Image (tube, rainbow, N blue to C red):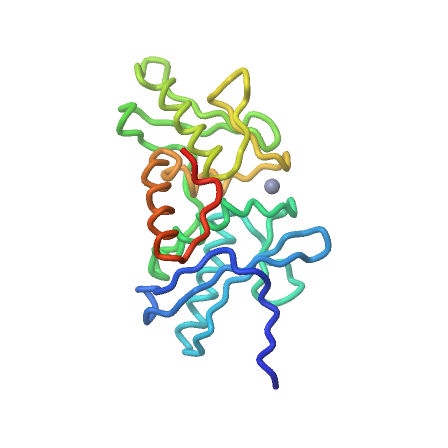
Length: 213
Ligand SMILES: [Zn+2]
């Protein structure tokens, strides 16, 4: 039996997974027809490595709202068929930071915001379109809602509404509640997310396109 695994193009790499014997974990992208699909893979053959790959893959299902394609083991894709590559890469990195027991389920669309000193909420406005809201009495609320919307535009390649900068939408026109929940924390702290990217790029583990602030 040859080792000719069709992995596709590697789009992200965790070179040392401290939660699993320092193995390396790769995220690969493939095209299946018109659909973009992803594969989590490690070259390590340790039994724990196999479990870890499955846990990370489940993490992408739960935290990014992806589905097992069923065409081949371990392939996951968005129901809309689009790649949303930046968002997948980011979610993959976030999931890999957690031990198996803490990867868990999707995250809420309401979060406390330290800078605005209030809760921010992500509301589905129309198909694939979300509004970031704050309570009316929160003085810094509107500004923070705009900042978080800008954060999402960078992290998930979403389009900011021209007439309302607190509204962002996915180009596919489909809902992605799980992605919004998973990356909410990152959108609130987009500068630190960008700094992480720069560090990874410096380590040569990540080609970070569109890293302009
Ligand atoms: Zn989509």
